[in-house]
Image (cartoon, rainbow, N blue to C red; front, side):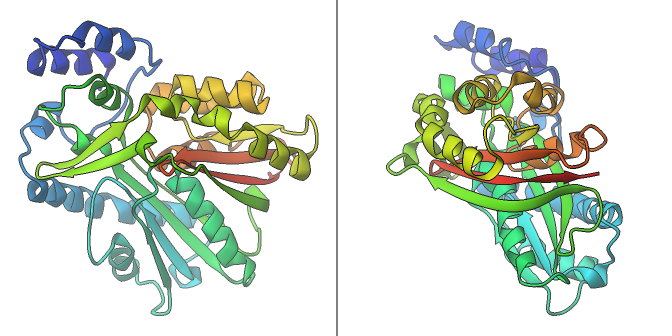
Amino acid sequence: LKSDDVISYLEKYHSDSPVLEAAEAMINHTTIEQRYSFMPFSEIMESAGFGSRQNKYEKFAKDSVVNVAINAMANASVTNNDITMVMVISCTGFMMPSLTAYLINELDLPENTTQMPIAQMGCVGGAYAVNRAYEHCLLSKNNNALIICAEIASLCFHKDANKLEDFLADAIFADGIAGCVMRGDDAGEGLVIESTKSIFLKRTEPYIQYKIMDEGFLFSLNKEVMHSIEMITDPVVNYVKSTLGDDKVEFCISHTGGRRILDEVSRCFNIPNKLLEKSRESLRMVGNTSSVSVIDVFNRHFGRVSNGSKGLLMAFGPGFTAELTAGEWKA
């Protein structure tokens, strides 16, 4: 999908909208050049009812997650018998049993594999999973956590949703699936975690929400969310100073959010713009893929970070919630 495709959709379904002109200007300002959808926009818009959308979610997720998991394990040089926890992060669909159970069966993971399905963390979900996997791996060097993020955000698009915030969601969110493995023994290339931090802003639930409709999940974004990064400046800056020291951030794996969010990350947290290049690249090439985003940005850092560099992984989401990870890159 390209921006012109989204604008064509708006002109087809919302030609009489009083905010159409503003929406088109907003879409052209996102910096997103392309993104991916699991099915054509026209078919998504004609998908009627919660059940129909959830059936599509389940089919696409099951068709995709196994290969992603196999590739993640191969990249981490682990086998199915080495996995001690499987985590599936997704806020755009619902299944019970979870995709964690599906993966245990399809990958023939050990019968004592711990399951951790994470369904209500939104965009912060990928970083939240990384931090919980770290806690699991602290228990034993033999622990290895398989993390799969699977988001089909296009199932949250509705042809009858006609507010400017609805058009913003249509403009930036995209479908994606990604996976990685956290090894308890720190073997291999990647981020060796040294500490984590969770931050929660009280009384900010309306900033990012779902409305559960007969037609499916409807994403709701309050404009106040644009000030959320500034509101957590002090705890983030203090965490960075206490873990990495002044001017010691040499890489930053940040959830993409949107152009404005990344600008605020740089301004409020004193993160040089050059360290957000891969986040901006991810946003430009695949849009905001919610929980998948931070894993995609993480992947884009391989081969580009020097051994021993100190840096951060971070993401933000509903609550309002932030998850931070500090550590050293091992190449």
